[in-house]
Image (cartoon, rainbow, N blue to C red; front, side, top):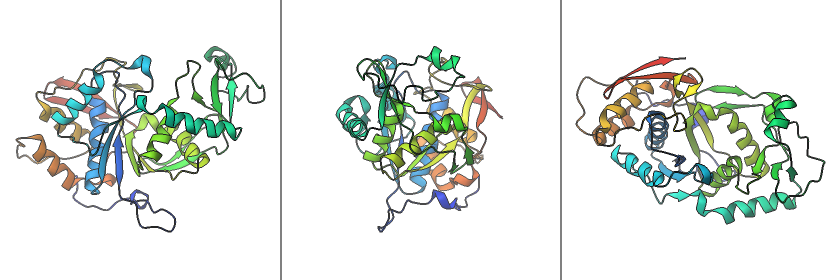
Amino acid sequence: MHTSQVRHPEHQQLHALGSSPLPYRGRFAPSPSGPLHFGSLVAALASYLDAKANHGQWLVRMEDIDTPRVVPGAADAILTTLDAYGLHWDGQVVYQSQRHDLYQDVLDSLVKEQNVYACICTRKHIKARGGYYDNHCRAKNHHFDGNALRLKQRFPIFEFHDGLQGQVHIPNDIAREDYIVKRRDGLFAYQLVVVVDDHQQEITHIVRGADLLEPTARQLSLFKQLNYTAPHFTHVPLAVATPGFKLSKQNHAPAIDNSKPLPALVAALEFLGFTLPQAHFDDVETLLKWAISHYDVTRLPNNKEIQVVQKSTERYEFTPL
């Protein structure tokens, strides 16, 4: 990893129209569906380093809006792990489960503007029609009660520039799809709440895993529809067990060890392309200080996936895919 601080032009601080540059505000937004694993450590570390190398703030937000998937105690466990790994956040932790009124206000405004409609289509119906939602219910005038609510896609995004992956192209069917903003069970959908949260928290830069490249197109379109300023997006490689099979809580990826954070932290830096010196680091604070001073987003690997094999508690092997 070189010490050069040359960065992509699109990765510089945002400029609001007619104003001074906005201060950098990044975030890490885990779902409390289980403990942090190596893949989530990579995402947290990448966003933390990007924020701190740019003298910015790094916020933590618990994406606990999908309550059936929330594991009791997982949010506190995640915060404990971040602390153990020296990834200390700025400000108060935000919980989506405490922000329903905010999301409803935004949804109400979209409904008032006739940009939302009710949909009765099941996954089975959508699969039978080709696998992508074809906006089947847009003109059906179904009742809102008991049905999913979809947003009329007014600003489809067919391509966008990512801070690491470069130009990203989105299939037409996905770009044009009217996606769900409130589920049939009454829960707000991820695509809506994440955009509202990022705007409300004044997030300027988002660094996260490459599995979220396609959802980014929907989020960019919603930023535009709501007349919000979109943040800059950078997607780092996804840690996978095998090609297409990401490390995740749902796939029972093992939790990282809070009692011995250095080996996993060193491995996460190596995953991100750092070449560490032979000198031994005695604690996570010293290691992170070194990493911040040597961070350069242009030197991160731009693979979409990297296979991870844990050989022991202190040894990992990586294969770019």
